[in-house]
Amino acid sequence: MNSLGRAPLPEFPWDRLVPYAERARRHEDGIVDLSVGTPVDPTPAVVQDALREAADAPGYPLTAGTVAVRQAATDWLQRRLGVTCPPDQVLPTVGSKELVALLPSLLGIGGRVLFPDLAYPTYDIGARLAGCEPVAVRTVDGLVDVDALDPAGAVLLWVNYPANPHGRVAPAAHLADVVAWGRAHGVLVASDECYAEFGWTGPVTSALAHGTDGVLAVHSLSKRSNLAGYRAGFVAGDAAVVAALLEVRRHAGLIVPAPVQAAMVAALRDDAHVEEQRHRYSERRALLLAALAHAGWRVDHSEGGLYLWAAHPSYDCWQAVGHLAERGILVAPGAFYGAAGARHVRIALTAPTDRVAAAARRLEHTA
Image (cartoon, rainbow, N blue to C red; front, side):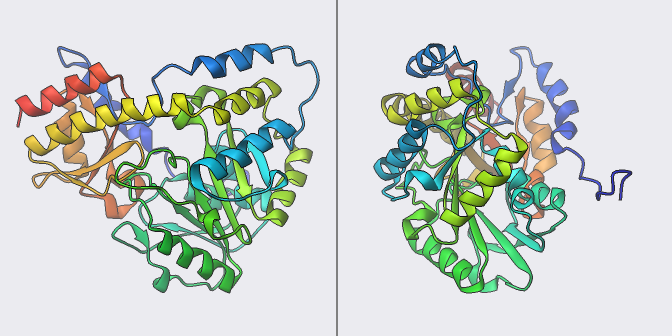
């Protein structure tokens, strides 16, 4: 325990990439940073306009969100994912990461928090912050092995499709099994769906397609609308759980700023800018897939999301990071996401297309 009475958190993993970034920057044509999924393309004009128009906001906004933002989220869920969730079961959040990190704490739950053995590290961190026991559960072919789940002491199960880091998209039947398991054992299922707009080989299904009871879906506008700097997201699902989150968030002052809520309405109502962004990412994805194949890399899963999950027969993940850094390309080691990622690297599509093309040329010329 530290002096604050809390078990120490693990080392922030990205600090370990610093020397590799320095190595990549020494490349004669500069670094191509494909390590972090940070949007680099412009925030859509329709969103910027909405933010400016709402800039005069002297009063405190509602924690519950405006009627407009909750209705826009409801309409988007129906239009894009085919699910029904009433506006009073939607709550805007300060991006999606704060909800992921704080969900067990906000709900005041104690017990075991389950998440996939290859996963976004914040599921683990959120459990630790709440004093819960973090438990990485077995996955098979990128999907949580429902038959192997142990309900003893479990209070929360995280799933994430399209998955970070490996891009697996879950079949609807798998999500139905996950939701049924959660309901059968009284375990809340939280589905992180921040990449829902980016399914490359087929449609993406929401866990809410199987009803809202015992289910939460977490969504972000960072990726679909290039709003990472706005910190804009929302959670939707189980009525009682959303009400409990609202009660605590009101006391804690966790409120999305009013201009950001107005920007969210504009973003959620407009599909045209999302299609433009999908085209950008699709173009970058095609460039990297071809170059990696030419250079002898294997890409697994990567059916959705903004990453390629790649392995080379000659390297473990850290050796692969070093190999690519020598070529001026920075990627994330698979070990950041769990021991099962020891042979893979995660390659982000979030760099300008000309820089992605530069990375592709470097891969092809050094194969």
